[in-house]
Length: 265
Image 1: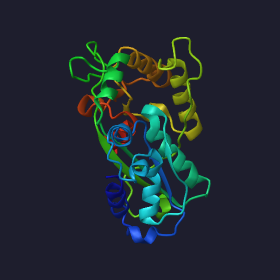
Image 2: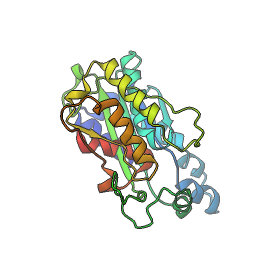
Image 3: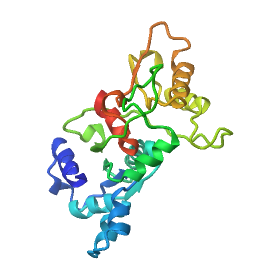
Image 4: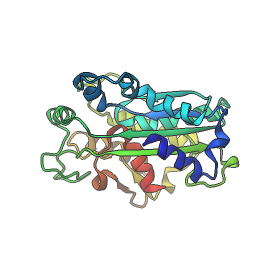
């Protein structure tokens, strides 16, 4: 699926995939769980020899580089639910540093193993009612969903077709928190947003809409709303519209970043 979507993304950019052969195009895939790994490595005893290759997360990137003949950096990024956006950030930096001319950023997340659902349910983040209601007073968690997506990234001056321009990218980490590693931090999220707009020179007051993470969890949503308010809304004269595509599609976890981009592009 990744290879098919990568080819489509390249052609949609007005490029014949054969033109990229031998180029230093980066391939960076955002992924977290490889749910086929358990079945084909540990449960399916009819070994076929290539199982270990096909079920390795690294193959998600290296197979694209192999099939398309690309010689740039090729790797998988795993930062849980932010994996795809971290992959995009890595590709952006490869291009801006001059290391690569372009990058293929992709993701694929499928729900194949019931045990993963059980683990998330026990963690308390899945909705027992089966509805994902971000920023709703009745929100009780999210619904898992599947996504495959690929973006072809290059400098605007070289592009034949442009869907969106990325003026700046910034990432950070919460670090230590007494509440635990899964607990989001309003302070750190607010700092990230404030520093981002300062660094890229764009006034947050020109924003008309903000696509949020919005997982509909009782802990995550309030923390994110407070961060958005602190960084973007304190001195605003007009309301800032916010939303989350998870109310339509559910949460694709490591691939969720691309569902957000697809919604607003």
